[in-house]
Figure 1 (cartoon, rainbow, N blue to C red):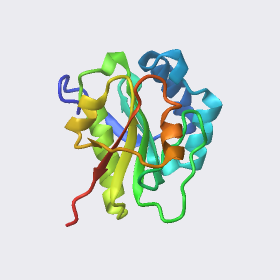
Figure 2 (cartoon, rainbow, N blue to C red):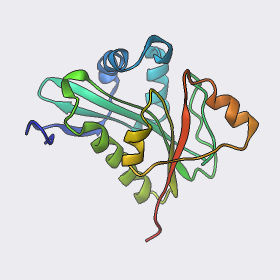
Figure 3 (cartoon, rainbow, N blue to C red):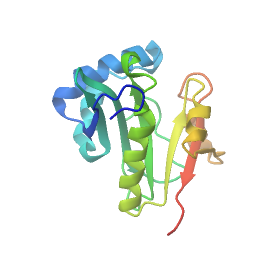
Figure 4 (cartoon, rainbow, N blue to C red):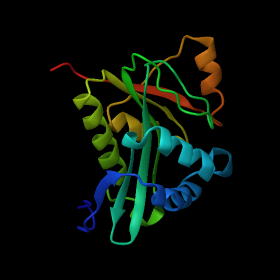
Amino acid sequence: MSRSTGVAVDVRRMRQDDLASVAAIQATAYPPHFLEDEATLRARLNGFPDTAWVAQGPSGVCAYLVAYRSVLGKVTPLGAHFESPPGADCLYLHDLAVSGAAAGQGLGPRLVQHALDMARREGLASSALVSVQDSQAFWRRMAYQVQVLDDPQQQAHLATYPGAGVYMTQVFAIN
């Protein structure tokens, strides 16, 4: 259940028939220069179906998270295809958005926690993302920290994100 409304919301893997809802949520959550077309969303879901999730309530899909396995320190340029390199040690969170109607229900943190739990079960050592639209405070609450990229190619990839894109990481504690 979501925290503030008591309405049942389930987190599940994203399906092909969710893509129209995902595109609609994306269109309300991001300015036009951040939007990815449905073909890109479909390609990402086809390539990484086990790391794409939605939150679904009584009115349908109300939030989503798209991720993929990567290597710490590697940034995928905005709009580029995901690549999961050999020796992946990191879950890269590419896109998280919550519909305006579901804002404030804790769905963003819930989706992130779901993804991080999966990453830990798989033995990945960390998670990373590019924070956009002044979202660093949210990601800090989720235990992410700013990480400086030393590699010029990765800095160039980070620069493809309009505004002040910031690379952030979370290294998992070893149990």
